[in-house]
Length: 200
Length: 260
Image (cartoon, rainbow over the protein chains, first blue to last red):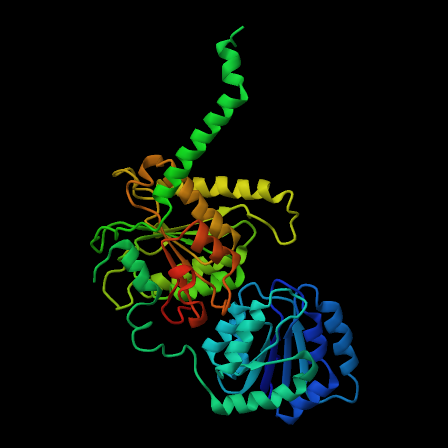
């Protein structure tokens, strides 16, 4: 959790690498001075990283470098993994109850993407190119095309912060309203009922 | 000298013929039950005891499944069994949390007065060994998959352990199996097929264990391996996809909008 007792207008950037694979390149990219500059320009006050089971050495090393007098005025925190899920952190990024809405930068896992879309915070999805499953990339791409997320690339993360401010303004909420015949009428519950023989 | 009867039994011709006949019989049997069962399930009244088996595949799979099940009607689905892989504490916790949610909401989306079919007796969490760990050698995979299959058979067979018992053939089997991958989900469906194949305790004749496979929301243009297997080989009764690009795969994948 970000330290409590900040001024009321704190703004959090929450970075999550997920539970299963390490994603150290995302940690380094978000602890890069240029990225912190971009955060600072966009009015951010806090940066919180969920760095994964193997991310601690990288996080500690880079975060200690940033501690110097050249500080960007951004408080940096990190933790490895939260067994109970990320609800608290996502709420903090949302700015609840009284802070400014921030941003979430996430690996491309569908569970995390879904959780962030539901809580409705601007989301930058950065597929982990070291994992050889391109379907995560596909999901990130199609969601960007439809205007729900920003597809982030490690090499230009600072620029995506500005893009996420645009996303905040455009704001398209999830879940999509599925066209007429879909969802409202059936969805999974409908198919389950059909297979069970429940005739409503 | 004519061969002795015993020698005849051991002759290659005889063995081949026997093997072939057996294979033919098995194949015919398999073909008889493998296609999606054409008949619609028999109508069922709400309130009858039912059993739903949900496979929680870990991580994003679990998150998607529980999200899609949001607001489950416990008047219709009176008992839930969640199958999780050993070591997957996340899924087990999420399942318990999901059930607490059902309990808190009174078990009915419409906010009915009955608080039935929720809480400790109304669900159980079954743990099975992993079919294959990440990075596990392919050599040892058959062994671990076999152990997983054995455990899944046990789950399906002993499903009548809790609460309701022995009122009729196949009573204990899940009425509906709901999966969204990965490996363990395929093994559970395979276990159901094995039981149906041999019609163990009326597994096939009583029409239980219909299966729904929901492809991951993360699959936009290609099916996952589990999806392919359950669409073409193990033939889940229904295959649902969540992106229009996958609609109609295998001639029957259904797109009903986003489900998660």
